[in-house]
Length: 100
Image: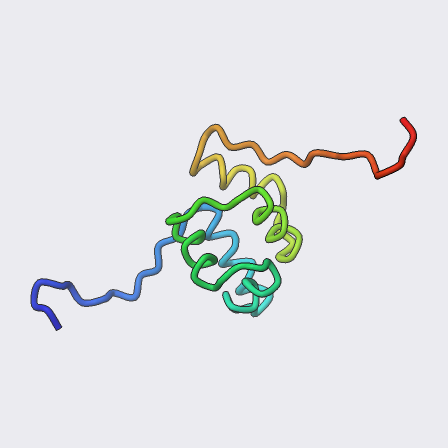
């Protein structure tokens, strides 16, 4: 071990949204690899998003919200703490062939 490298403290820092995800996963006894498989991403991406090293796409946020049963208002607050301009919106689209 390099003497200049501080020993690992085991502290896992998360963003507000990451904290919600981590708590949601824990409540469901779900691992990062299990969540990653459901979302269609890698466990490393899940970890990076939780730590704020990667911004979650709107698609990711919606999927995780639904899978973990996260409250939309709590998610919006958490995301706005990370980025004050962030707004979580769902765009409704008419069904193919539907008459207007």
